[in-house]
Length: 176
Image 1 (cartoon, rainbow, N blue to C red):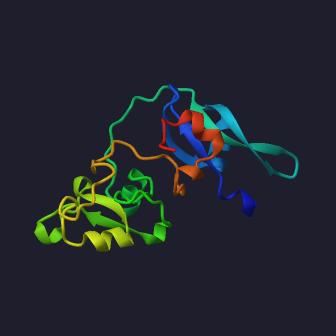
Image 2: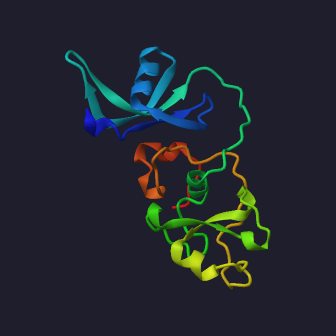
């Protein structure tokens, strides 16, 4: 059972738009309750004493959900997700432990800690930029920071290469 803990299921609305991820156990329960259609399965199987269940990889709700607007919470992890765990200066993908949050307009110059002023940066780029603006440091940004409407749906996914193959056709183009 321990080997199955890392599996997540992508939940789509009835129009096949990604909503979020959930545990494969919850997805299997929704399937057994006949509340979802399973569109893709993993090759892995969960076994009970009498039955084997293939793990659902992608499920679609049968009932239409009215789209609710929500605000993405500002957090370190969500900034990393927005920026795809990529340094916005040198474009490298270092390990998450080597990433930092950088204030585009430095705090020492009145920059706020907000979606529109924070980007993901590797430690060396953040130190090199220091208390200067990207223009002053001659370090252009890969993308301007903005508040996202949604985030990549996978919990625990650290970079594009970690997205399960079973999900790819259901997710909007994720820069590969």
